Image 1 (cartoon, rainbow, N blue to C red):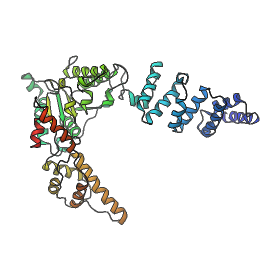
Image 2: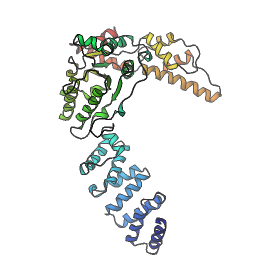
Image 3: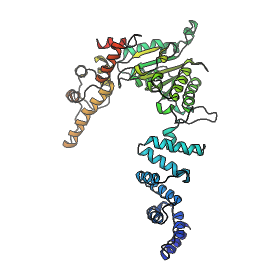
Image 4: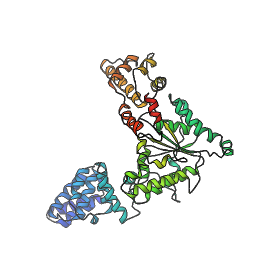
Length: 431
């Protein structure tokens, strides 16, 4: 039926090409049918030339551009419209998504905030994922358990890091496994661990392995999961995660780049950031509810940026340095990374000696370089080859340890800002 109506309007417009009323009727008929999108774009451009101040037509053209993923065209047209409130909310949301896809997050956030202020019930999955708490919520407002994972790894899957595993086992896992015994001495199971060290040395992996070792639930919290553009929502988001963890204990909450959520308050100019830190500290103290059975693991590459209040006993009172793997650990990591790949007998010890300062991530990069070289040769010759020790040693010459820059900075803090002894482990490692 709609096709017949469109054809009749086309004929009417052909008979009267200057009839803007007929053209607008045809546009409104076409706009909901994808097969007419090319014609619709041409009609809209003609109509807007005749009626340059018609916001309704411009809104339809923006929607048409958006359906074709022409984000730049949407933005150019939208920025020429001074009164954006005259456009439908859906069109404004499309513009916000265009800003987001063009990496202009500030403009996208500002526009979406105005949309939600106008209609609090308005939702858009793409924009909500970018600017609101990503986890779904239940009717009672609590975070949904879909954010939980049960790690399928444990300490046996972690190459090396024996000292780190031993310390976590003694201070965290044993109290959880022997809760009654520890309770008789007034010790509660749970608490906070701060893992710090160069990037790529396995802080996230050891946190997941800890949860797997005790068969606990695991919640991975990122900065984008907590921070919200609406005042007060960041604190609510943080509370939801802790409330859920308390309901599902034993549970491990892992917070990567924790210094971003717990930065020094003296460095913050806005009160909003300080409020998040106060909420974070309150949750760790378990003021509203007990944190027994909840293990909070924070990871950071820059412990010197973390507010000192987090290091108070009862919060992150267990601070563990996660160094680059030693030679024995590197041998194990290389063996684990190469497992299942075509290879000749590999001299793990030789490779470990030739990769000073390498992190786990650096080892990954070295193996990737070696494999890419082998694949390139195989595509040229048609003969696949196995990975050899020499392939890996050649790759190691091309990739430099990423931990060097970190230790340059860390050494300064260890030598000149270490009254509390926090960085003694760094000094010991460097010796």
